[in-house]
Image (tube, rainbow, N blue to C red; front, top):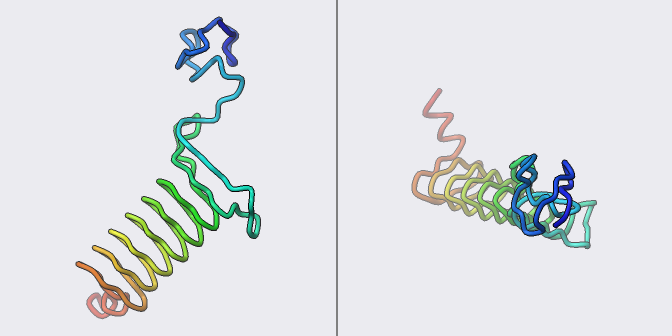
Length: 137
């Protein structure tokens, strides 16, 4: 048995939550959320070279992967491999990017199922900004 880090109540070391205050993993001295996160020690312009985040903070908000290479559910990076991403190059389900391969995209150039592009795009329902402006003006 250990003391809960939040309220001091005695709890099992394997407890998922404190029966007194509800703190998650109360026997851990520190706890920073659910899931997995990795940041490389190598940095470029103050950003980690690789940031992988499939994690939620203690308040249950997703932790965004921010790095030169961003991998995760949400990400921002030069290369973004995410579900929801922003990047110069992006492989995502939903993205805003320079060059994108995505299901839904807003990009300079793209291959997407649905998207809006500035330069060139390929896909099922993909439209250029110029084409959209002509249709609605």
